[in-house]
Amino acid sequence: MAETVSILFVGDIVGSPGLQLTETVLPSLIKKYEADFVIANGENSHEGHGINESIIKSLHNLGVHVITGGDHSFDKWKVFPYMRENNTILRPLNYPKGNAGYGFGVYEIPGTAFKIGVLNLQGRTFMKAIDDPFSAADWALSKMKEETNIIFVDMHAEATAEKISMGWHIDGRASVLVGTHTHIPTGDARIFPQGLGYQTDAGMTGSFNSSIGMDKKVAIKRFTTGVHQKYRAAEGDNHLCGVFAKVDTETGKCVHIEQVTYPEFYSSKES
Image 1 (cartoon, helix red, strand yellow):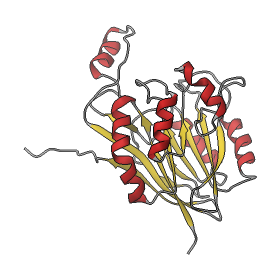
Image 2 (image 1 turned 135 degrees about the horizontal axis):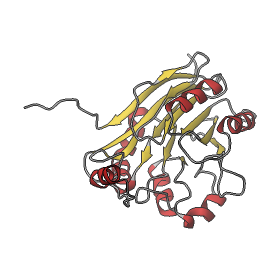
Image 3 (image 1 turned 30 degrees about the vertical axis):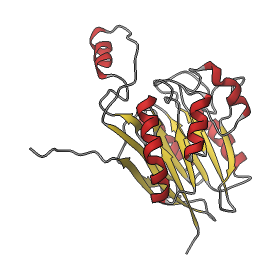
Image 4 (image 1 turned 90 degrees about the horizontal axis):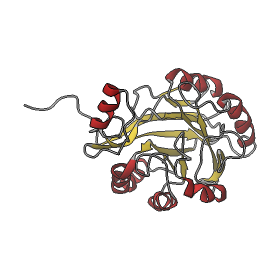
């Protein structure tokens, strides 16, 4: 039987509720899934927008090996020096040159003889006009392939069409692609024909008594008035959402992928 490595990915951690739930349940989930490598998206972890050095260190202490980002990666400028010096905190590769941080890295998988490449990309549809993520992916994948066949991609994007197009674009060249940013978990975990494990969006880790993690009253006011209101992270009904995958160490192909939700959502309540 082929040897595999197990990867656990935690979807966008939103504010203190997301951090507290991650702190509470992540160690048990790592044990449950026997995860060899843990990745988490942390771009919303500080007050709902951005990240700081203290949170990065706390997540590493919980067992997260690499933290990915997105369009809020640069919201807290004090983290820039740390991003420049540490490749375990990633931001989307396709931001223009000169920005702080790393867009990808290759890391040893603890307790194994294998390495894993992790790539962070950001879409452009309905988002900031940054560089092309498809050509950025081509370049980064070729670099990582020099060291490992096991490659995980966090595609931070608004449009589902852009995420799934990226999936088809890199199928056969990466092991897993998981989408982030929309904070709503999708039920389409599957394996593409050439071995790419795929899910359009992992969902978020934080309060679902909310509008994608933010106070729902503020969100409604923004929509009904058309006037900017300052968002704040919501509280209550907290869930951790993510993805679990197994990858063949020889071929780099995904052999299993599933959605992770804790606690699970329920569609009805007893009267």
